[in-house]
Length: 371
Image (cartoon, rainbow, N blue to C red; front, side):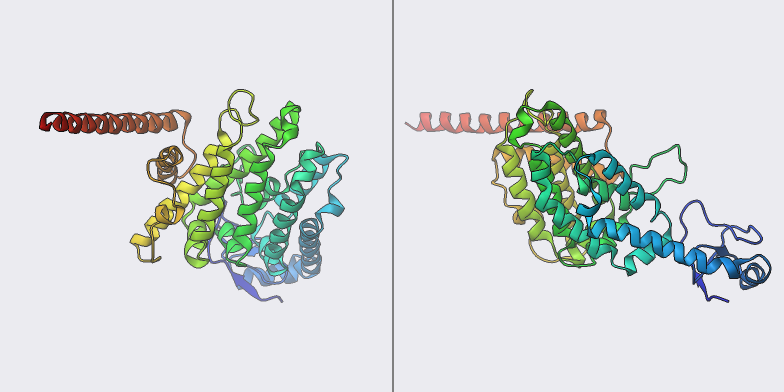
């Protein structure tokens, strides 16, 4: 008879006992990790009378096969990804990561078997080869696929899709290795760079697909940074404030120099805005942790070092307001909410400029009278 394990917390829907149907079933088989019980007595009934003795080893072997398959996809993506048919490869890998690791047991076993190391390698390899793939008209973002498959909060209603990140899973990955967050962030920046590759000027379909991949990757970073545990892992547990500021400042400055407008592959500035908003969200949490004494040192705005009064700083200040509102709401802002914040920010900026102009005018008049 296998040792029973007790769940530390429950996810919706709460598990029911395999024998009597009681909800919630706080215990589960410690061998196969696949069957739930409410008590030791129910486990004994299932083991002796209902056939779990025979099924346990089979379930355990299946769990290991599923986990090994996903890890192979992450460690050796080039052996799995077929450049001749990237959409099929993309769907196959995403399906495996989403479905084979959909329960706590499989995800836990994967983590023990090296999931985080494999994922870090996956991001690093994607960063290295991403530009070549997009340049050769192969629109396939491993980074966007991986984070949406592994870190997205599951919906137990098949007809509904959740727009939330699993903060605990994100934090566990980030704290698994000092290079884990830089690998994730670096791959996301590289994907944003690919949106502006020269080939995009003459290949509108590829540009649309690449912009979508970039939008999804940076949108998910926003979802992840809504979660306190994710931000805490980045800033407090790993101490990545300065590194994050340096990478994001460079990304904002780089993308600001790329062509925008109607003929841009990012015509609405979605990628540029998302990078600035992600930066703002990190600042919101950094300042929060400073107030709580979880962090010590300079403010994030000092670390970010955007020149006071510069156009980039003024634009960033608006995205900081959007970041505050997004974290406060706990999900993406509606277009009307974002527009309202933008109008308020612009009105305040115009008021400040008028006041500044008025002050300068008064000073000139005073100097004229003295003469």
